[in-house]
Length: 416
Ligand SMILES: [Zn+2]
Image 1 (cartoon, rainbow, N blue to C red):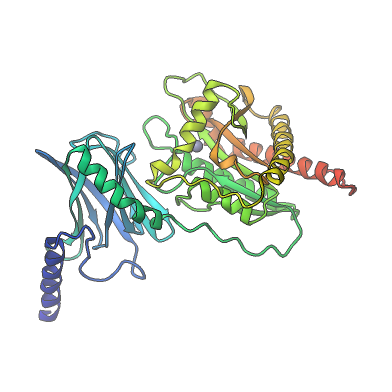
Image 2: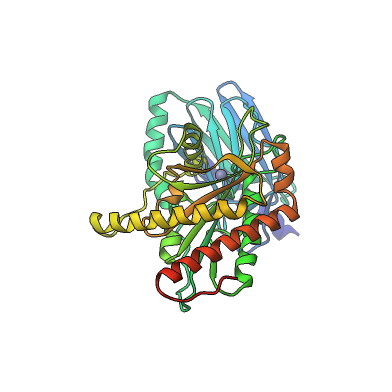
């Protein structure tokens, strides 16, 4: 008993010393979360006092935390080991003190993140995860202090190199040993980036599209004709560039990004839409949507990186043109298969500059399954029967797409 008390006192002293040293890195007393039981966040409170705002998160045990800053929009990003957040759905939506809003979630396997959108320029003046008196729980405190624009800019500039290092490594696909076509399914958003939300915030895009993507994978794998991969198969953040890189590294023959939209004040706007990539959007709504979807990296607190080109421009242009023809062909087939079974958007075939559709050598489409802002669409999106029908329609569009490609290459194919 005495021994434990001594360790606890010593830990508390060590923690105080580290925090007092001014380091933004808060070293937790006690064990690292890695290897131990999962850390759980069970509650959040916000305290506003003059020029300071404190965000306090109740954790099941102490953790290491590290903060950095980003400008335009102004954000504070706090990196943590993997934390499971058990918090009400509307947490972080309210503006309080220096906090305009905040988000939290898994950023990469084993790593979680809190991203705070700032209402005004501010830096982190204290960051620690002190164990509470009983030593069984801990409170992570993120203290923000108002600063002038210049000081914030300096803090953001200093953070930039750290942020670059913190970007997750692209997932490494396994070596392709079979000759079957590779299909990369890309469930949008994930982890810290929830995507669109239904009214009330309980249902979010990242969960709906992941459930749908898993169903689609099952349907596509059932015939045994394809190797089906996913850019994510859990609630984790994947950057837009890494989604494209994963498709290219796996030499995917088809990339299908799955999303669900939301539009404010547009309860009547509904239906399924199929997009292909293009520098010029087909219409203003599509341009706005692509802008919104392209902000996913900023939402999670990383800088978007363009996908590096690795061959000469002329060759790339040729490949791009051919790829575009395949993308359009598949998108049209999708609309054709959806038409008899789905409620389509009034203009179901659109184009816009989505970052995830930029692989020059992978035919790519982005499907917006419907609008979370429409109760009728939301009911469909939540229905197992509807999801099954849509996944079946997509799967037969995939069959027809590859049948046509093989036919072009001179191989006889029997359509299912
Ligand atoms: Zn989306």
